[in-house]
Amino acid sequence: MRRSDRTARVIVLVLWMAMITYWSGQPVLPIDQPVVATLLHGWQHRVAHLVAFGILGMLANWALLGLPRPMLLAVLLTSAFGATDEYHQSFTDGRRAAVDDWLMDTASGALAIYLFWRLRPRLRFAITAVERLRTALL
Image (cartoon, rainbow, N blue to C red; front, side, top):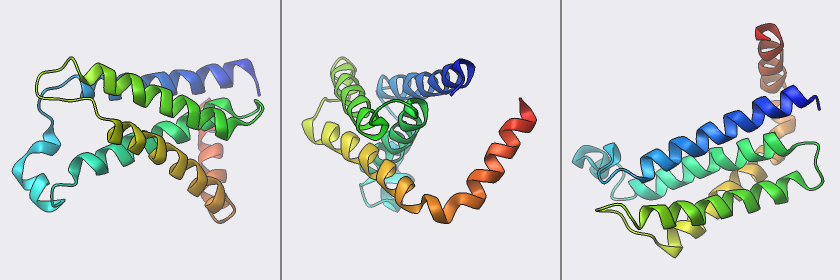
């Protein structure tokens, strides 16, 4: 992989981490609105962790492709970031740090990476289209 490609992928990964850090530092989140809580039956935080850290795991895997054991490294990175995110939340009023959230973060990243690689042959058309678009834009 070209150095510029890896750098771009790492930048996207770091930006996603920054977005998660920003949201975890907010005392009140949009998902805490009664309409969202009712719609998701109180599971809105679990869904948020699943989505945010699933995307983080996939971005980490994408950034680490070409290195030995990129999937394992991506899960470890997702887990480590999840732990630091929980620690960061402990300093925010109205938020708490929780081991179960950290485990959810780790599992979400691992699940997303597993599902992506498991379903990748079926998604080859979509991946090819995205790569063509990326090449056209660069």
